[in-house]
Length: 48
Image 1 (cartoon, rainbow, N blue to C red):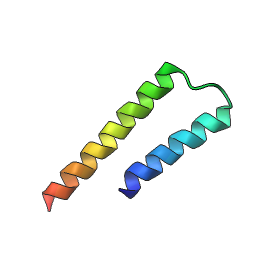
Image 2: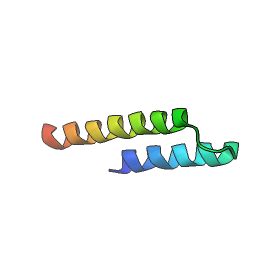
Image 3: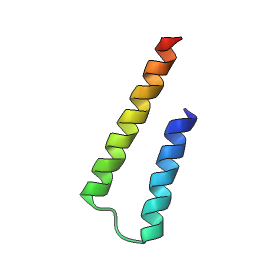
């Protein structure tokens, strides 16, 4: 849970630092990162 939260926070900080409007590519990258972190959390949960 924390990993995904940190990743999303990092993305939001990166976007806000650039002070640009969010492009579709930014959303695509954020979506991929979110899915990857969610999948890892899901796998870790069932690995136990």
